[in-house]
Length: 92
Image: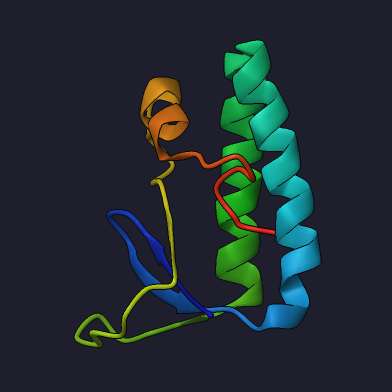
């Protein structure tokens, strides 16, 4: 799956890594719902780090359609809240 991190670029992540990413996404959703700004920052950073670590960065000039868009590390809590679906940032 092609994942875009806003402000950074695209990363290709194998489907086999999504259980780990979904766990972090669930934590992030709980922190957003609870208004836990510190936990939100920590978990968003961990989620983005995991995508970078588990995936393969695509060249900057690659224009692949992104199947998933994640906020950048500096995104505000309210900004991320607007991006959420019922499943969080990552479907499933």
